[in-house]
Amino acid sequence: MSGQIFIHKAGPGLSVQDLGRLGQTHIGLSRGGAADRLALYEAAALLGLSVPIAAIEMAAMGGDFEVTQPSRIALTGAPMRASIDAHPVAWSASHLLQPGQILRIGAATAGVFGYLTCAGGIEVPPKLGSRATHLSAGLGAALTAGARLPLGVDNALEKGARVLRCDNRFEGGTLRYISGPQTELFDATTRARFDQTCFTRSPSGNRQGVALDFEGTAFAAQAPKGLASDFIQEGDIQMTGAGHPFVLLAECQTIGGYPRIGTVLDCDIPKIAQAPVGARLRFAHVTLAEADRIAATQENLLQNLRRQSTDLIRDPRMIPDLLAYQLISGVTAGRDLEE
Image 1 (spheres, rainbow, N blue to C red):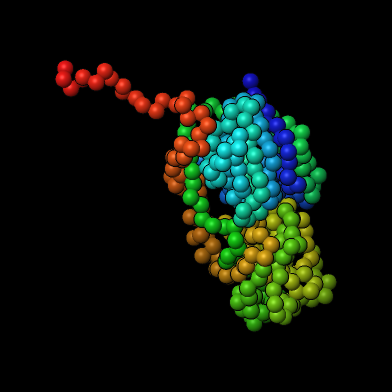
Image 2: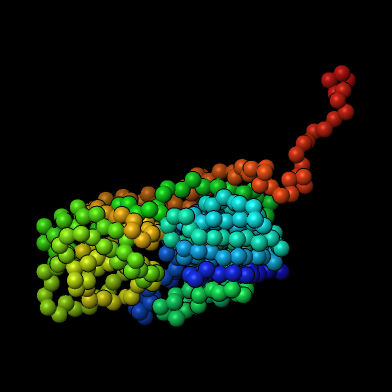
């Protein structure tokens, strides 16, 4: 029998997200899904799953959660303060959550989007092949206090807790990008200045995209008047009419008329999605051949993450039921060697 996860308290940006919907651009629907898809792969690696599954995405703040059946959980993405029954638990790790226990997830200490994945999966009904909430398209809704989500059964409760040491993608950094069909609308001087500029993540941003602030001259395109609208996608770097860059994210629109100087590589999108306000960001142009080589390194992402995970060694002081464990084995009468 399947159980539920009950949300006692919810931060302002909770939603169910998976890897999103591919192949729906023709009906005006962007992929959507998790803002940081890498976090879903990390959860799958920690829980020993064959593929990433739907999780609860939390923007900047988590909430209080309870399950009605035993479930292994994984906490990934932007590090957040977390505890089970007031006992702190590690982030980027898996844990066993028992019925009646309260998992409390607080504010992010770095980055933006954190993820709570239950090993049995969140089994809300799929729409157009995905369980992901797509707010701008009206698919699903934000999660609020009192919500109950159906859970599948975790068939591997005996597996021990695991932990991952993750690269820091929560404080900005360098975003690699490739040229696109409109890159040549920006002259060579403008493109070079773009690569040399240090940007900061603007307060203006959401799951549709992030604006970038900078000092200096705007990045004007030599675009003809009345530039025709064209297909756009996640990762595209649009220049507004004022010459300010805007990087599109998971829930972006599918048609746009602003010129694009390039497209951020898919593997670097988590870095821009997780950049907190004020984080410093730079762009580095790579060739298509270089992008292909980088993409090839991502093909075995889940297997690589699984190999990088290790057993989580718990601090005995943080185990409330320590005396319930078998701490000593092989007890004898003490005269084995004599006999």
